[in-house]
Amino acid sequence: MKTMALVFLLLLSVSFIGISQGQLKVGFYSNTCPDAESIVSGVVRNAAQSNSHIPPVLLRLHFHDCFVEGCDSSILIENGPNAERHAFSHQGVGGFEVIDQAKAQLEAMCPGVVSCADIIALAAREAIALANGPSYEVPTGRRDGRVSDVSLANNMPDISNSIQQLKAKFLQKGLSEKDLVLLSSAHTIGTTACFFMTDRLYNFSPGGGSDPAINPEFLPQLLSVCPQNGDVNVRLPIDRGSEQTFDNQILENIRNGFAVLKSDARLYEDETTRNVVDSYFRLLNPIFGTSFEADFVESIVKMGQIGVKTGSQGEIRRVCTAFN
Image (cartoon, rainbow, N blue to C red; front, side, top):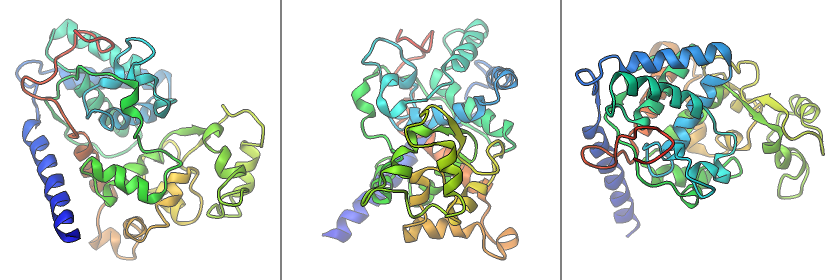
């Protein structure tokens, strides 16, 4: 019975992802709005010039959009306190104004053609490139969703989740343990607030105190930046020593106990995810092994196809913050 259930889950996962891949294509706007991708690129680059935090913010926005109702820009809707964007799990998510700027330019050039959902995916690609990460083709053709409900974000992956909870939440979206590691490595750029560190530093369960997985050399630094009863809005890099460059340093930190977020540290507790982390640091990996950059691209493109609306589904919003 267990074997049959596992086979069913695998078939469901493959079928789900395959359907999504068949509905999107690279260059979807080549005829209807040929400058669409360059317009998004320009807006993101201009925004990043005035605010260096824009790349990680846009990358996080893409993740949060796709994990609720699929990659359909539901997170952008602003229709009152029950809008999805106000969910507790979306705390700190931003970049909305960048997407709005890109949408305004696209509407002026090609009205009613380019979806907000595609703008988010394209903006994330540009964000990675700006952080010296890999460049890649983005399949497009998503349409915008017509649902935005704060309760639908209740099952987002959370930094307090156990590794088993994280694996289960990713599996529900058709994503593997390898995808979990690679998409978590997006934390290679950006910062977090001390608010998200309090329990790990001062009330780690069971037994209280600090998380024993934190390297003893690193713990005093974290305690200094985020003192008990201090300002929870103080921010610190998620990737120690490489917070502005997209690379695999975040995985090296996880291996050595220098993970900042609890959820990142948990990746090294599970045999499967630990093996994925270690695979990028084997002796002959640069020659014969897998490429971290190539694998990350595969995972983020896969994530970008979760639950997409295409064809006659959804709509192309005139403004990203409101349904038509």
